[in-house]
Image 1: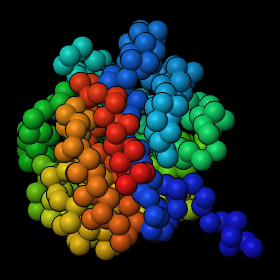
Image 2: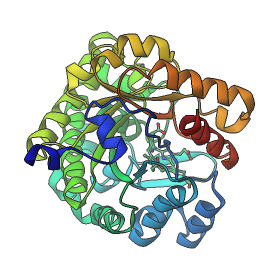
Image 3: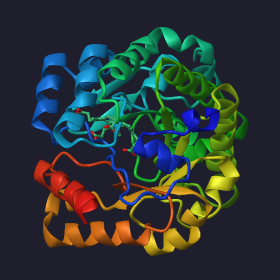
Length: 349
Ligand SMILES: Cc1c2[nH]c(c1CCC(=O)O)Cc1[nH]c(c(CCC(=O)O)c1C)Cc1[nH]c(c(CCC(=O)O)c1C)Cc1[nH]c(c(C)c1CCC(=O)O)C2
């Protein structure tokens, strides 16, 4: 009996526990976002993106919007990976049409001005409140996913002060002042452990680590800064919160996806769309649950190609645990009707 009560009932949690389901559970990266008119309306009510993130009622509302519209199997907390740098003391703002801007960390003095990891909670407490609200408002069958950026990806924004095509400034700091680079990664790692831990205490049932720029780390750098930092975060979370599954997303890892479950302790490895589902089924899914990996461009173009690719992915991953998702976030120019078509194809065959 005790064993039975421990077994998860929500579909995503069952897949994360290794179960092969007849139909894969589904959710979508950036499912709350600008492609939805109801999101744009709530964002306008909040004033701007960051005000929306820190307004617990409105952040919970936009988290729920795609659940109401589509009945996804999971909701992802509405927030951003760059709130952690802001909570560590970096300035953060968003330039419309361009993306994030931050004060930069390039010297020891910049680093010394950052706050300690345990000082983040004052700033981030509205995010934990959003999680608490969602645990009360979500339908009982919908799982709640918390998240954070992985240290390398967060560091690339903190060092450059913005998104960069090749993460050049972060690579330069790593090569020119490795002790400072590693100290920054350590500070982010410690903050991330505390941040995710608080999300779990507030009610997140699963957490995802987004390493969007993992693909620019090569060879030993990948092992040290993508794999090792994910391993450290996951080990600490597992010891504090046994039974809470972790999804790791080392985007564009390529061959480095092989063995990533075992090397980090992740329950699920999320795949971008640069790898084929057949390759990933043979090389990655053999080690555990995978998530992915429809190209998000299909949400713009739709049609028979969307249906064919969706079926191909479901089929390729049908022999092991799988969570259906896109290979990266949905874009603002996507058609909401194409999202419904993807869901109907996954659920209806
Ligand atoms: C790199 C990164 C960021 N944020 C995130 C990542 C990792 C995933 C990835 O690679 O996309 C993660 C993220 N950002 C957002 C979420 C919320 C949950 C979800 O629905 O997925 C999540 C999980 C909301 C958001 N984060 C952002 C938006 C758009 C803001 C708006 O409403 O104007 C949303 C809905 C803004 C953001 N935030 C970030 C950038 C580079 C941008 C600007 C680019 C853009 O405008 O799409 C940093």
